[in-house]
Length: 108
Image 1 (cartoon, helix red, strand yellow):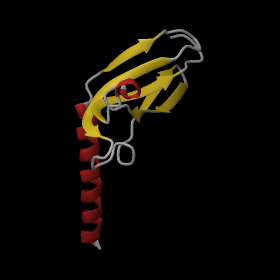
Image 2 (cartoon, rainbow, N blue to C red):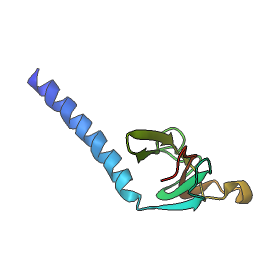
Image 3 (cartoon, one colour):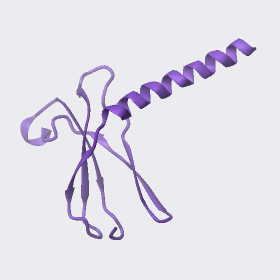
């Protein structure tokens, strides 16, 4: 019984370490848009280099959630894999850009 508990704790630690390694790889975001109420703010991150057909797959196996906080309000906004950051124009299928869009309901 004790051994099963140790294995479970070890497995959870490995998952957390893997997630931290990915988070640690993300340095800082590039912000675009107007910092005004009801204007779209876009954050673009340099994350893990990957491709549409890669394993692990950026659409199935990665998650990007950004938390925006002001006072007691908190919004968790899901992000997405954006390939080279301009895939709609370039047809890019690989890259390291990850993006999230947010429409704030107040300034600040």
